[in-house]
Length: 319
Image (cartoon, rainbow, N blue to C red; front, side, top):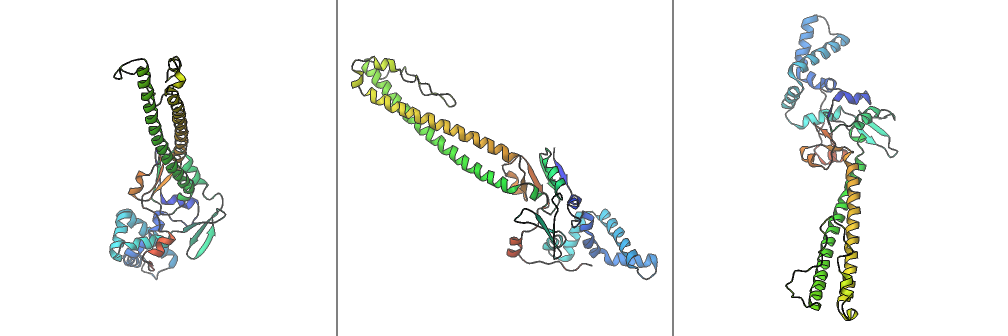
């Protein structure tokens, strides 16, 4: 089950945040201010009183948003302004900027003023994310949900998973090499036994082969009693081969155990990461390795560095 979080949810943290109607009020009034003004004058036929006109404007804006719809109204605004970035500037001017301080408190910067969120301001945001949602979708541009997802921990675990994955791959390659060495030594021992016993080299070896993947290595892979029963066994090269085999088998087993431990740790880290939301700002991020995603349907506001690198755009006074 997934959850959709709308704009009004941010008002639980601070009244500085807008719901959709509040966010689009100036924009809609900008588009229809002449019509709204003329209809008010025609209706009342009296000098405009600020209080009455303000109430009338809110009702007219709400009515037009309801009739036109949010998306069509925004599209009309962009068309009238003449450039797509106008809506970015508009939203940024009306959305508090979030900053995480060194003491982990959160400040809101809005209209040149700075305020600090109380400790329980994000309690509802955090509580929502603790529920067993598969994904959380949000139309909000602000980062209140973002800061509740522990992205630092997500990145640390992801980095650790990448390292563990490389270590597992490396150990798996070592395991393949050790297995080749074991098979070569085992074949040499088998051929030598066949030679000592007077067998034809083409005879199918009777010694058991290395265990398949997932099986434990048996200590009985080499028939040591048979080898020790040969006359002058200590003078045969079989003894040297046995030592090599024992060492190679130890390296194989040790590497295999290490790889299994790394795979266990990798699985554990992946389980932890799967319970942390990854934030999706664009469709290309949907392939992130996470079972739970916070999907920003409208993207997010530009960061400070992005604003500095990008074109400086500023919305004009719409009122």
